[in-house]
Image 1: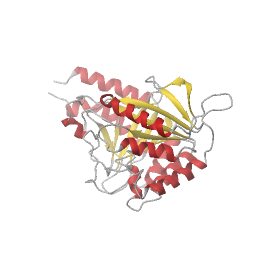
Image 2: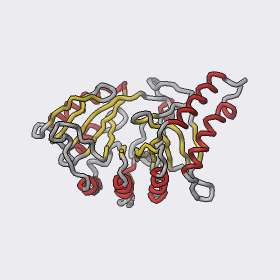
Image 3: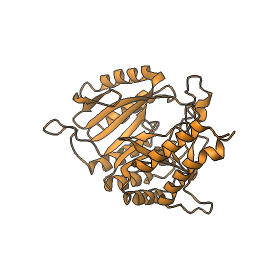
Length: 322
């Protein structure tokens, strides 16, 4: 017997997917310095040092730009995307960021900051400075209105990332004179880590100009302005049971597909370097299809989106029969 409630869930998700704008996320690698217990991608130092080809990513972005339903939001993550510097792919990240920003896209790069105090971290800072120098500006206009930066750097503060407080502060201090948005996320179970991070950050910012604007995030967090350049805000998320987190007692157990929506209801279409693309990012049963063919070729974006929509509708009949 087919689970009718599950069918309705998938049907509703299909309608949302077909109607709402979509954003792109590229999980460029599964390699990471850390092997976190909560990792939904099972990333770690044991994974292959391989990255989605930058030309392929740029081509998919170019295809998306031609589609009116593309939200013009792009996210780069991993594993750890900045690990490419460690293994000789120094121009990988700068190529992705430059292409995305030059096309006027809202661009977010997610990092665990493990590189911030390494001997190759200086090269990363240099490249970020050079990229951000092409998009100068102040965080607040003369009229006091927020001038959103072109690039967002997303950091994590939680119990799974050793030295995360020191590493994240190093990134913020290293970019003090760049117009950039920095998003610091944590888990609902690790709020004390965020509190400690804010205390330590306030200590090192004593010589900087720090203020707030009369606005809050969707979670009610204040937006901080540093040196009228950096826009800094924080958020909290739920620890889900996907990946290694399934072994954690405080992880929320999920069975049905958990679709990730960003911005104003954008559907997140997530590519990974195993050749798969899925709806959502974090948890639950995946709705997915292949972007990479068995012969190494790639599937056009229009076909990928059609296949994802088809798989939403077919999923209960193929995997949830009783």
